[in-house]
Length: 235
Image 1 (tube, rainbow, N blue to C red):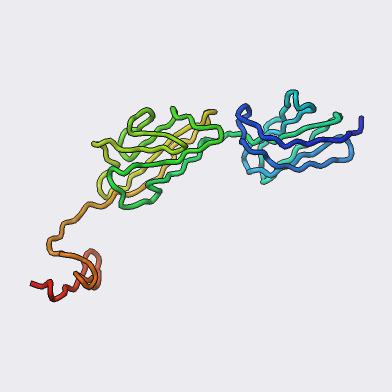
Image 2: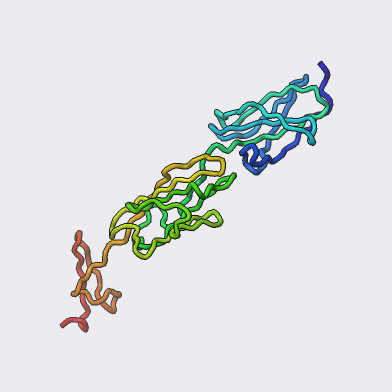
């Protein structure tokens, strides 16, 4: 077998044709003393990768079979007799979009019944806006181009119409969204919740609570509150 002459290794960013991340993946390489080179890189367990190679940058690239990481690293051995060999590592996009509620966070309280709801959507291959389905509480699901819904710059905004409410006073509302990326990878029924503000309670016997200038809270016992009243407010 012909001895391997100088081997060139090229780090490259591959784009949507292989559904990969748009940033290079750094790798190391080593030789076994013959014509075999081993390429190794850091990986995410359970994620899928390709190793691509060519002997001519102006030519076509060939790909390994899909490599699924079982730990935080992957390696692939490649035998060549070419004078030059180029490599690039590709992480395949096999997951749906990332979803991040930004306004009305998960667990928010005292939410107004008609507060806007905003959600961040991100994916390396882009969002399929036609796939967005958002459900707030018991309201019917909404999708674009519903006028209550807008999407721009990775931010989805739901603004309730004049006769639409997120929920009733004190209710814990569950919001749910499903969305796909441009490759069809789906994130389904991502959910979070928040609580609508409690109703106002009229209390004719309370004048004001403002430290030494008004009522002063002394103690509480369950639903009962004890105040002292300055002499100038007593009747």
